[in-house]
Image (cartoon, rainbow, N blue to C red):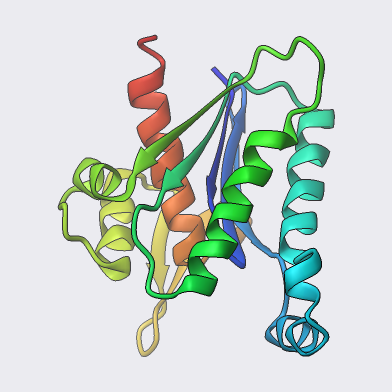
Length: 183
């Protein structure tokens, strides 16, 4: 089962598998400067660049690979109106991204608390989610003594630094693989 998992946001975590190959990382959908400039020109009210870039990234993957599921984290609460509007726009983009006629891909989501419980603790913070991932999957590890950074081992020779958005996407992927494969 091929799964594309997304942690939606300005820095969108992604994780997906194609057969036994696994990929993960973060798409920076806009820089702080781009967001500020867009806001000054009211561009965020007419077509937020983050929405278009997310759509482009998803469609690029869908053109290249066949996924059984596209799964995202279902955020139920936010701290501001603008954050709510952005998240709703990104979620809608996911719903509309699959424009392939007769596509077999299903779209699903997992509530935040359910995902955190699946990882190990319903109230887990970002650091706990990363530590749980390192315990659950040996491909992920903190490296460094004074200021350890989180890495994904893509291969024996290649380490890729990752952030908390990627960690969440990996957990979404793990949850989907565990729960949706039964359907």
